[in-house]
Length: 377
Image (cartoon, rainbow, N blue to C red; front, side, top):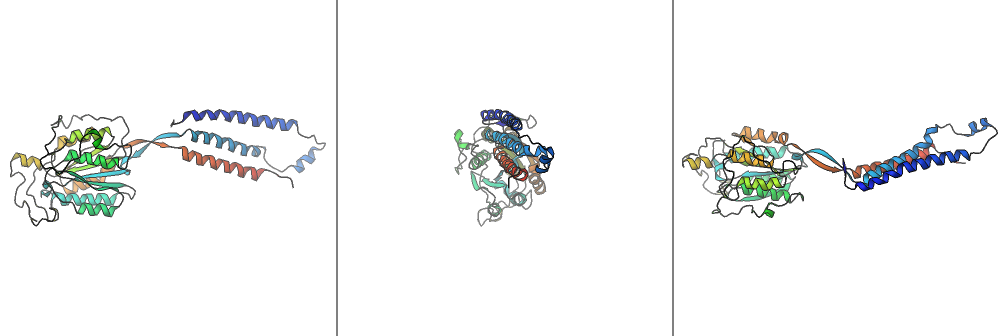
């Protein structure tokens, strides 16, 4: 326990002085007591009460003063709080590769179904936001407890060209900064969160091809994490905008943890999306019959999650990377995610509960004084 205003604790020194004054006053009253000629008469006149009862009101008042002094010092206790219970930002990949049918009926439909169940399983006080990203990242739904709004947004996701994982991370940090004043916006570091510019070049990643078993670095690992987390679901690799690891460093500097999920198999097949998933286009069977690897190694890699980079993103921010090759695995990862989110230390101020306790002690002292005191008739 720590105190924000420790100097107030000096007031506790008055407690021994008050107790001494109370004892001295009691002895003085006994010295001034009237001498009666008949002890039997005193016993008859005095009510049958225990000797200690007359000290209870004073003891309660002393206790109230001590507790009130502690409350005035603004004590704070560091407690473990599950960060998943605060807010979750779902950053969902809606790039064209999500039309791949290696996960039936296609990756996007399977992801939508799993995310729907995840939202419905959350407690009513858990705020959830949705960031959709393809060629640019967009905050579709700010953090809210309105499940209907979230489900409607998830059902209406449409695909686009490109994959901006780094921009999605930065956009998620910005969403968190709107509800948590302790988290600075991502753009305060001079990096944007992505634009619809299809020609925007990818920022080189200085730590490309990291060793997935190396553990990476974790800037800010020794500090308190923000209670909000980012769950990033993607099936591909970053193609433009800020590099994911650079964006992860910005998130880590703000205590925001990112939990990436690499979705899809290593053998993507043809791509088929519905008209709704294509944004209302009449080409419902877009990509039908085109194999995932038909465009050469570059196309095959674009349809597979960049696991080394996603692992480093998780390691850098203090999160955990998950892999889900099918719909069932994705559902399991999302359902078990709260168990993997570590408890974090949060400073909770105890002044208000202590002040309430002091008020209760005062009321008890008054009740005791009324109950055990005698008054002349």
